[in-house]
Length: 123
Image (cartoon, rainbow, N blue to C red; front, top):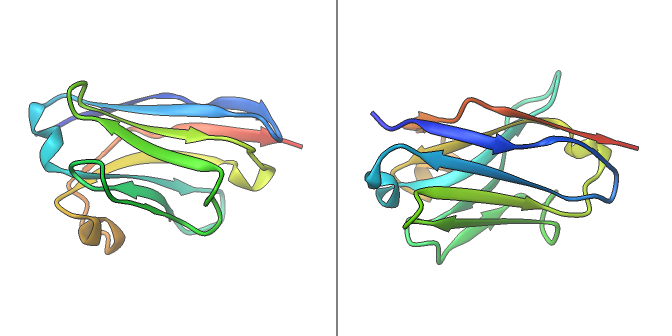
């Protein structure tokens, strides 16, 4: 059983930046593709960004391309989401997630979830 513990997030003005971190409890972290999802009130959960096991391949939702960057450090068992040029529509609860592959992440076959962290962007 792998635990994912998130940190970061909070309140920021539009145009600002935040960085989310997600630390895994197991060294098997490197065996998983990782992603960040978000869910705003009244909206469906959205896959924001994903990264392959070795960090070479990444995926971004159109809504965040050019503004968000996903990265991972397998030596530290941690995945990050750097969020720049934040907009009020980025306000949501953000969750990190682990799955066997990018395809599994995009089809909802998630093995582990982080606890979630609130990101609020004021206008």
